[in-house]
Structures are given as C-alpha cells and as structure tokens.
Length: 188
Ligand SMILES: [Zn+2]
Image 1 (tube, rainbow, N blue to C red):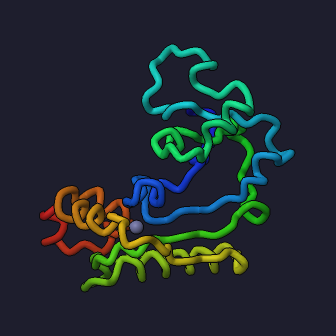
Image 2: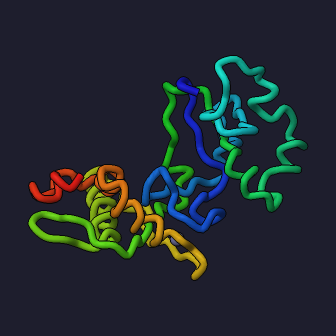
C-alpha cells in the first residue's frame, strides 16, 4: 500500500457511532472521483491492508468485479463497509480537491483542550485551524461544517477516554503540543 493513496468508502464515525481514529477532521469526497480520468485504475480493497500478510494474492486483496462491489458496498454490513477502501496507485498524482471536495467536516468533541496559557473548546480550535488553512492557501470555496450526529453516537466518550487514558495521542489528535504547560507535559 505504500505506493497508493486511499480513501475510505464510508464515514467510520457514522457507521460505528464513535470518533474516527484518523482524527477529528473528515474530507468528504465526491464518488465522481472514481470515474476521473486522472486515475486510470482504482483498486477496491476487500479487507483492511493493515491486516494483510506479507504475501497475499491480489484476488484476495481487491475486488475482482464490479458486481462483487455492488453486492457488498453499503449493503448494510458496516464491518465489511469499513474494509472497503478506494485505492489509487498514483503516488505522484494529487487529489484535486477543487473538483471533488464536498466539504470538510469537523467533530465537536465537547471537551476542552490546552490552548496558549488556558483552555479552549476542541471544536473551536479545530474550526479556527481549518479557517486559517483555507485562508492561507486561498481556498475560500471550501465548505467547513461541524458534524451533526445522532444521540446514540459515542464519540464524546471516546474523546474523553482518549484525554484521560492516552494523553499523548490526545495531544497529537488536536495538534496541541505547542500549547502544553510544563505541568501538562509531565502528565503526558
Ligand atoms: Zn459523534
């Protein structure tokens, strides 16, 4: 997979009702990307590449026909859906966000994070970082939206557990290492 870019086929926050382990920000991409002439081939994984053994035939790694994909993709089996990634073997090419970005969605962890000499709501930190980036790179059309989710979602519990039990991962997740006081650093 080292030579491929990949996109998850589903929003793991939604299908598992928990935070996405990649982080609190999600880029939603149009499926039209799959038909893009920028990529001559798209490989669709059957299972998570993280679990692949060193030697494994391509037929077991990737779907072989579009009918198989049709039968399995978003067919209501969320564990299977989470295994499906669209992969592009074109590391030299870039994903054209101007063309394919639907929106940039960020979580509201309902948790305070260290900021400067005090604290700030995590959602506000993320939102302002995204707004600054969009301004810096002159992309005013990119839509930035806060995630709406169901009452059943457990993402707050996951964020709270991350802060309490895995502080360094929490710091990395919000990119706040510059804002930690010496006391907070010793905690981590
Ligand atoms: Zn949630």
